[in-house]
Amino acid sequence: MVYTRKNSAARPLFSIPSATIPRAKTPHVATTFELARAPFQFYAWIPIPIRKEARVAHLHFQLIRWQLLAVIDTRWEFCPAILVVPAGRITATHLAALRQGTVSGIARPRAWRWRSPRRAGHSSSAQRFFERLQTPAAFIPGYVVPQRSRALHQLARAGQSGQTDPRRHFLPLAIALARVISCTQFANTEPVTAAAGWGCWIPWEKFDQQLNEKNFSHLKPL
Image (cartoon, rainbow, N blue to C red):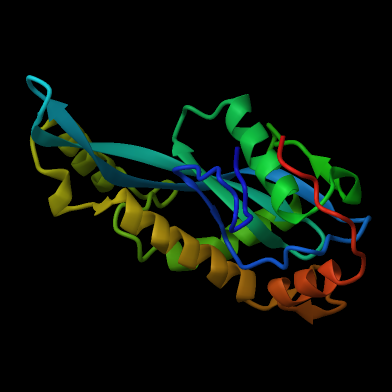
């Protein structure tokens, strides 16, 4: 389960709240949250201990391609929670964990509507959020730039096959995750202009204001 409460006993390996969220408040009833498969992928390595005779003989560094899953508030283009999973291995369990974690960390499910991932693409709000995300993400070593990462994929294949040490060219997952969080926070604080031109706002400010509009009790984790 993905929990955003600080005192939660459940601590998932790859899920991080993208911003500090007030814990005793809840979004406006008209809010819609979208579960989105972000067009955001990156390479990062993890250490794997190789055991021999009940002891760790040495470490193997495995390079993995990761993908970002995100919850998007379609009203204000704000991302309250993210989940990082191996690319190409996204399951319904991952989506359910992200949804349950968001529910447990913010408020009751009845306080908003949910929109499942779309096969034909994302909503315009999610798409604009991901476009803002790409600017800081370009500075992450190993970030997969859509349609312009041929050399990166070749280097990654060499690292995955053992021809080169992945530590020379890619980040460890813990450091890469910290940078992904920073990118998400950047996108949450960038000014947004409405497509119709009726106004401009900063997503996290509007989301925080929205949290103050109503006050429901939390849904306790099962």
